[in-house]
Image (cartoon, rainbow, N blue to C red; front, side):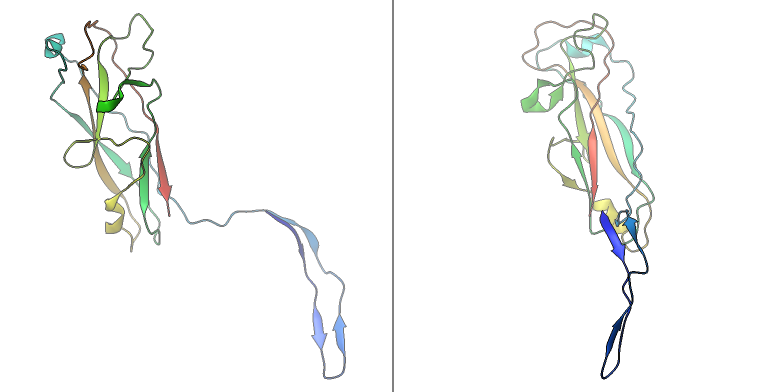
Length: 181
């Protein structure tokens, strides 16, 4: 924040220097920043999964539920756009395999014994949490400013440590942070 702006006008001749008093004094506030892209929330429809899918220990629902992370209206002139997935809101069910708890894990209507694993990118690579990852799609729109998209997915996983399954609601949430440079 700029605390005060003062304007002093000085005139100078060969023999004398003249100054006027402050013409304006006051405060000014504002921010100088590059623009950002617009990124809406992403909902990945998980659908219904058959309970029998998880008969064995360490079973996964091999079907990735894919969606698109849209990065819209990017300005011209950024050098890069990154994304960082934060630790899931409900915590970890199997952190070593990036499987997080379902929302409201203590609620009796929430499924038990399974969690969600998320993927990011073209080949359903599990998400690296708490690590900024550069979105290469921005390089295709850098000179013109535009929109691009990134594949994102999720699937249910029953960790090896799970011994008991209970059917129920199976929703999850993750917060991601976009950074623009």
